Amino acid sequence: MALPSSITTKNLSGRFTLNKTLSDTNAFDAILIHESIGWIKRKAFAIGTVTLTFKHYTDKDGVEHFDIDNHLTGGIPGTQERRPVDSVERERSDMHFGPQLFYTKRRAPNDVEGLSEFLKGNWTEDTLENGLLETDVKSDTAKSRTSWLERHVWGIEEVQGERRFTRHIEFEGPKGQRLDTIMYFDYLGA
Image 1 (cartoon, one colour):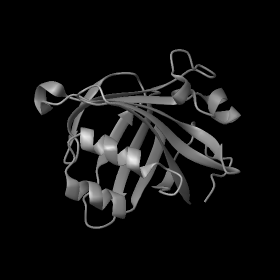
Image 2 (cartoon, helix red, strand yellow):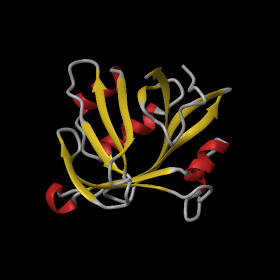
Image 3 (spheres, helix red, strand yellow):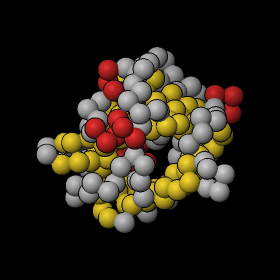
Image 4 (cartoon, one colour):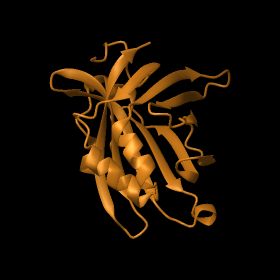
């Protein structure tokens, strides 16, 4: 389902599922290989459905947050992401990707300075006016003994005549492998 106009980068609360028809699942699988995700889990991701439940809010100190619950079909346990939007690098670990370091920040309205052409995307006007969301996730090399980096830019794009939540991802693997992919999501409602 297309996003209603009320869903913007200033209000992403709701449920979303990965659209495998629009998304390049082969590129996503290649990224998982370079992140040392095993064959069985990769096949389960490929067959199953990934659903994200976003809770988007501002805390009493004025810090914006994304609490994201990832649900997977097929009996694979999901993960929880707690993302303060404050540019501070934090540690996290989960059963799929191991120890990681990440930060999330909001880019100022219309600020695409320093982004590659791929990450600049074809964002909707309201996305550019409200600001893009940028998050870097990388392996915690000291703990994981591997090295990879994902740079995400999140926003809303019009795809085939419908507004969609998208994530543009630039990936660099442990041996310098470079992959770009876009994840397109269907909106499931509040």
